[in-house]
Length: 446
Image 1 (cartoon, rainbow, N blue to C red):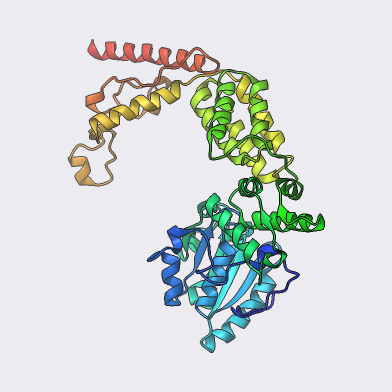
Image 2 (image 1 turned 180 degrees about the vertical axis):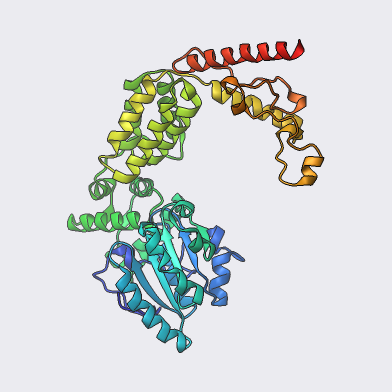
């Protein structure tokens, strides 16, 4: 927890992992995140101007959050302190702040880098506020979770949120090539090559995570050297990653073919086929969260109100996987697959959404009927806002005969429930309501 100063000339210990040795020391070495680092982009401008401001860096593992924080601190000549939600507490923070205040009086800035800031609870995050407000420290928080939900609003309002993307396959390849040829910090002294198939296998199974790619490369290189080989083969990487290759290219036809087969098996109520295609994807290295996202969409689009619980099951499976991780995280995903495949099906809500969207595009922003508008001021009341609005709870069965669509779309109906599952009950309910409304219209007419 001691303050440490970042110096470009600091020697790098050979005993450090390759991923740490190859950590970029400046923006010139950083690969990826062009939307933040390209010419005229925010982080590049901050670095070149030697500016510092409080930031929340939101992105997946291995996308460069820690590295960017260190580069920004170094470029501004600031002292950087690493503060972890896992190993640090309030007592550590107080000690850091005391040191930062001393440096502040001497004109030296301190960057407080808070790793995994989403692991801090609300009360713990509150502890940072006064020091960020006073400028005692510049806060740079890193998170893999959506900061809108995981970081308290007062802290968010004092920080700029920057979104980092997964590192592209091309950039992962460049990072691997650089590590193999760099004699000072990388594996260049080993004079190893990597064959094309092995390189593609490594890029694919890194899932946009630079750290995973470099750790696997180092392990595979060690295996190749022990076997007195001058080239890294796919067998070395299979051993390093403990994975076997399957025909499944995340960016190619097979990716789309398998996910299509998975969705169509769910839609066709075939739990066995759906499980097979799910496991094909997972064993080939597909991100399980991608599969979970597709199931959430499927639950709403293809099951809908035929079984309203289907969407809850899909979301719960996503949360369960996110909490548990692999390998056990496959179990709740499998449960969700079998539930969705065997649930009654209806795309009525999806079709209703599309029909409503067509009217929105065709008719544009139609005016809200006056009786549906709120009237918080006397002027609005005078203009007729809210006039003749019928409050449904004041009527028998909470039922009123009242138009809620713009007059141009009067009596338009989008949602037509099917006879499948729970939706059949909704269909009966709507039919009953329509009969009551007709009776109300007849009574009004008489």
